[in-house]
Length: 587
Image 1: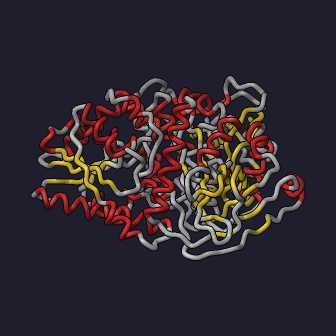
Image 2: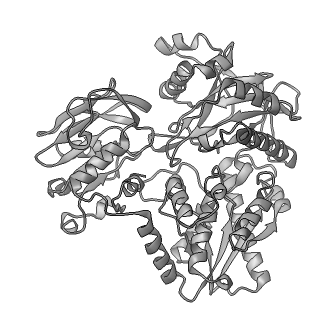
Image 3: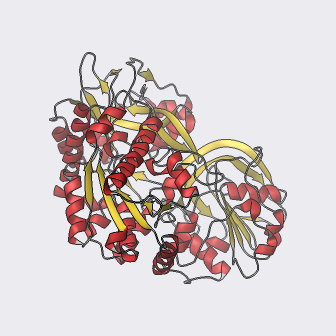
């Protein structure tokens, strides 16, 4: 993500293994170094490290989060286990120097996600910014041109993040030296080399990523060497298959559709674990691809597989050496990894983030409604339809103390017995959501400060919580019922999803929202065969960090009424969680 942001600001950034980089590799090759964040402590066995001599190389170095702690630790500062901090903090600039050049002393929002903290600085460093909870939020050694920050300047929710990184690019002397047109040219050249003498069988999901990746390949390969297959899994949105086929056809790109919905429902019957769901979906994609290839008589020695993997898929799947598994994406399963190692996978946009993918789509002159549609996961509605292998009646009250207890006194706060995936301190969590019950939930949506504060505080204070909801409408559920991924529940979710999408277009707010997962959860009143629907609208630029999108209360009230008219939907919740600590998708 740091590399993506730097590239977007006009400088080429590459990602290298810090343990293999030596000072002798720097001259003429690199103008600056960034030590990234990560899930480790500097005291962990096997924690990422690098040659301390890199810090004396003479080129500027920026340490971010874990990179900040590593720099301080290697140069003689002190790092200790502190209080975990996730989400927004206010940065107070003390000295507008280094990456804070041009900044005033007023508070600016920054994004934190860390456990350890620096408590003393090495010789030669000075503090240039702090927050209420972090004394050394930004530090600088002007003699060695070393700067380090505890927050994440690369995320969109750090208010002046681009300014901070642009200042570092200027410090390195490489401003305005790179563009996405350069990327597209170099990637097309790389595809020609990789596919020399071979053809590509490409699996499309219908989302932005696969559509753009397929279009990049169509610029390089003639039609007879590129076969695009869209697999209808049964978990697509209403009318999605027809829409994608028509849109690509209008752009001169042929797409073949295979209906495999019966097979998917049969394979997933009784499966409730989210990781198993993703693995089954990915494996079956490959089975179908092999069957279609055989049916068409395609020689496996001359046909390789193409897919629309983007960099967040790799990061969340633990695909880099020191990254932590958040969730296994369907296009990052072991069978796919083996093909990658064999050189039998082509991934044209694997190094890009979502906003970059959209920019490439614009360069390719793809229809705007395809390029800027909300992201939709490859496994589709299957990972938005939560399942449970057993019933449970344990809706537990949230136990808190101090200021948090006082703040919760206006709510009936409970911990729900289901779980969802989250990301805290760059690590995967699989924990419980908490739900807030307010006398007037629409008033909370109008003046969000109180519920936003609670959504930030609860995951920080209570380890078993990684997500916070607000109950909006309907009959408040009291049990978690056993439920799997049935056709009936999938259709229920498909109807709810279609209602939300149509509503966003009708109210002309679709483009204000980055993504709007509609989640079905088997929460109900006793003896009722019904589900709860959870609304998860978020704003972002790159999907690595997000904040909830707060719809106007009058719109939200109307939307709740429409959703509760769907047979089998008994209640509506709103997901208040930022990322971190909650991922965008629940599974």
